[in-house]
Amino acid sequence: MTDCLFCRIAERGIPAKILYEDELSLAFEDVNPQAPTHVLVIPRKHIPTALDIREEDKGLIGHLYIVASKIAREKGIAQPGFRLVMNCNRDAGQAVYHIHLHVLGGRRMHWPPG
Ligand code: 5GP
Ligand code: ZN
Image 1 (cartoon, rainbow, N blue to C red):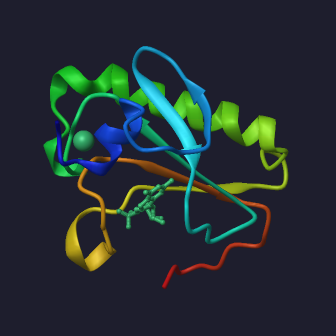
Image 2: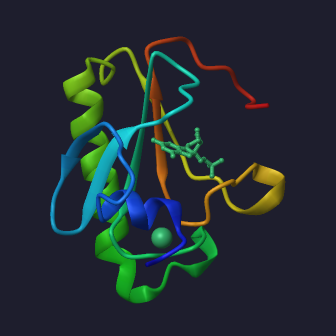
């Protein structure tokens, strides 16, 4: 069994509040939300960081954004606005090394981010 947390969530080995899934991706609630809406969108494919995205993954990455938009609409944060974030490596605070788009909304976001 994989020791990647998000691969295990995708395989349903670890429980999560899954909002959406298809053959390529999964969206689930973040366990430690930083905003009223905080959803993670992941590919089923294990890609450790944004630096590991390959030419062949272009369609998959676009798909993650489409799923994120769908979640934003369903959560009612599309028009007020929301933020999509992918942290990469230590200085950005990446904690789980399986790429994920954070979908954050439901409150006013600050810029520049901390
Ligand atoms: P990162 O810091 O890597 O960009 O984001 C990792 C995110 O995963 C964090 O927001 C953290 O709260 C979330 N997270 C960590 N472990 C779990 C878990 O077991 N379940 C869920 N649903 N989210 C998790
Ligand atoms: Zn993984």
